[in-house]
Length: 421
Image (cartoon, rainbow, N blue to C red; front, side, top):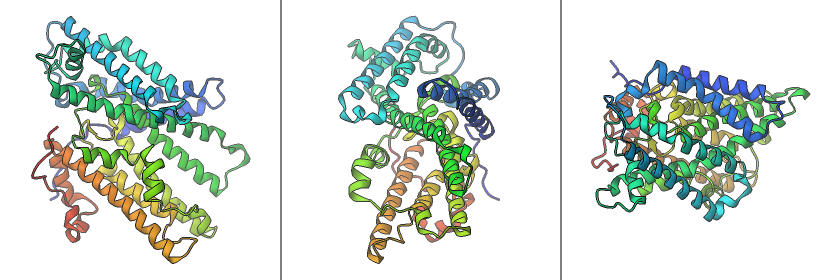
């Protein structure tokens, strides 16, 4: 009998309902005079709202152990709430200064992000006193990262936990790095969908491109929502972030600017400028090939949807065991890496056999990079008993269980030294 999986921290059906609401808003806004920023915010809000309502009122996520909320105290500590608000204000200012100083964020790619960052920063500061007061009455340990960082800004070093401050800043670094990228990609994906000449008819190429854009937009919507809504109010706070330098390197190198300007361009460029539809003959073969790509992209995005408002790279925010996570620990990585082989087809290079060999070798290198991403994630999450139980169960439940008997290094083993979070 196969071992049971731990309960999932999210409900896939509710997350899909949120996606439906978001895509419905996207369709209703197609002829709207609103700006792209306003439309994007509405679509994001429509996607998140059903999930937030269900998590609070139906599933009561804030009452689960992972939220670290306990018995209601008589009242909150106003002084502690003010210090936490100062901690939030300080980290937002620090994030803003980083965006201003670093040349990367002067790129036009991020132009759509600045008004969004302003809106969510002001909204966060306005709601912070109420949120922190609500949490302060319930937190098992009310002196959290916001509190200790706020104390540090007041130069109260004695009694301030620098360990908590480091954890707090590391958590915020995840949000500060990934949120601009995901939001900029989201607005671009929406613009691309709105520009599609659907009224001219839908041939196979148009069906493929439309489906691809919709799948990727769904992934991006949940990415943005995940980085914004790291709230204990819904049991979705960041419990810990990747504690090792190597884990950070293998993750951030897969995203702009490192991926586009350095890693892919100069070291692992496995493409020759052609894709599958330029290589394969038109007709049934191309349709079957393209449909397989869409299936893999769909699995990749479904893995993101399963995470709901808990999506985030480099962090742990609760165990996910639903959807494709019932079949493999890393469905997104598996599907994404397989799709790259089908999209670019590096094994059929225009320049000939040697180019095909080197291009394939480069893509294998990227596959290995994702293997290390998976391993560093597993090492980090091994701090949590529920993840250890899940990973050990997947040694026998996974669709790759038989493969791990041939390649034992793919099996999960509890690390001898779990990285300290």
